[in-house]
View (cartoon, rainbow, N blue to C red):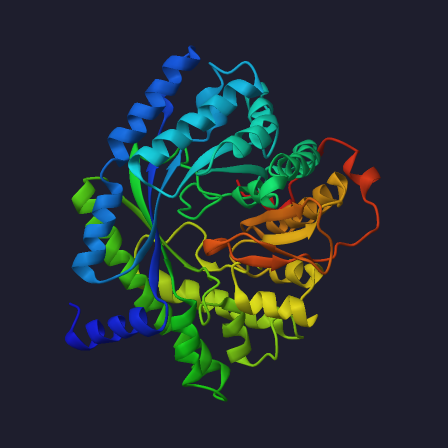
Length: 454
């Protein structure tokens, strides 16, 4: 039972510490929409999504009003479109038409993003997978709300290096297609190793084939809440520090559980998971980097940063799993650059480099996220960065990802402004030495020895 003290405490978190429910995401299976005729398929997709999600935004707003909890985004994730469109799509342009349908229905029901323009190619690519991947630059340049993701590796299967090479080229091509908007298309494109089926956060959300026909997943975020709690235990031992983070994460997750259950009841769609991710925004005080500084670092990136982030991520997960029986998705601490003012400050001060960010991804909840790099960076170099991150995920049995933005026409020392939750970012330098011969080998990197568990 929630008592008066807890209600007051939660209100304070919302009013003063940037606590919010970052997203309610409806996952929708499109497997029953499959058809060999493209126009029929597009109509089936539109109708299924519109029918299932038509009340999502109104329901979210009603819950906000009833409980006084901000729900920042209402979103949709769908079955990976490479699976849905394979029978009907004969060209990349055919797949791009499905992306336009997704965009139209997203606008119709009022959500801000729809994810699932995706392919799962950790071991190999079907013809449909390759066509969808090659359509991504066109699809993202023609749509506003569609998000795309590609899973390139897993601990069980290894890393598909042919797909890694291709995705370096696709990221670069997407940047070119959207160069008039500072290569914004790349902000809606992410590659994964060990992608989860139930992630409510964009750009990586898709509705896994093991999921129900429709499901409610909720993402909660509260970096400001954690930072404020840690201000009260400055100078205390690691034991006190860990207990404080864990208890705070528990309280934040309970808010997500409450919203998820109510959304499930009102929409009559099963509750899936709560994803407790410390996802920052450009707002002052809503920063994961600020938490690291409160733990005792001058800037994110200083010696000790990886250890501090590991501690934070672990305690967040421990608090979350005690608060809900169904914690899933990514759950942990995001470390995007452009969306976190503290990260931006650390880059500008010279404390945080791409290499240090890569080290931090060994212990955070995702990976290299929303990082702007020079527009003249070679596709093979982008593939090399992706390969490194996929290897971290594969060997460490965790989800890792890359959302990197080569900003066409800009170089190191310049800034790029994305606006809204995406914020702004300094262009970060990239190691200039070539990995082209490595990327051009082709084939797969095998799964690690500890993948053999049967």
